[in-house]
Length: 198
Image 1 (tube, rainbow, N blue to C red):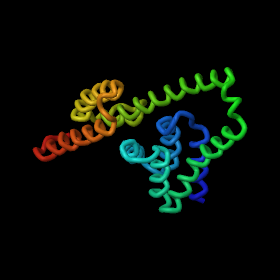
Image 2: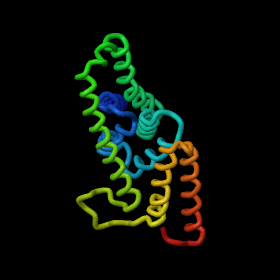
Image 3: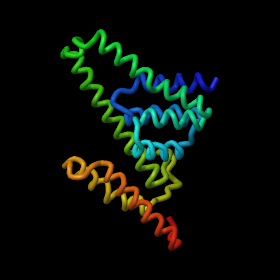
Image 4: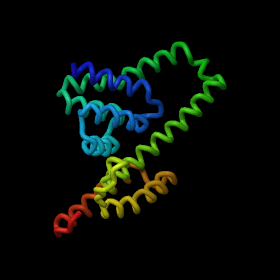
């Protein structure tokens, strides 16, 4: 039954991911694409949309996957699945383990978990760059590379700029998102208008 499958898949993703919505991306990519619910390109497009729209990333992507797969009830099942583990864990921690969290061993476990999350986020970053800028979806098969020169140019300018501005607290992240979207629309729109192949 698709509804139970959506709920259980996103429940596992919510249960076994530590480090926020972005840390879920590798598990989401593996489960959602392997089950055929979304294509890799659809998922990558929606990751970009989820990052720039209000609301938690995990909820956005679960809801979208559910609605694309099994309409509104599918969206409800997937969203409940991804949220429920966090609710359960927060209740348990708040009721039983608040003193336990101050123990040194627990802190060391979370240090290891943070390193793992950093590795997962780097994996997502590399995957998105290879897919979006070079059209490489399988690292073992790189014969059909399609280079997006406009995307590479925008990436080369905006990535370092966003990192420096956001880290220095001189520009709000939402302004960076709006500026990036405007530049993307302008560059790709001009190329389309003048018939420049992309």
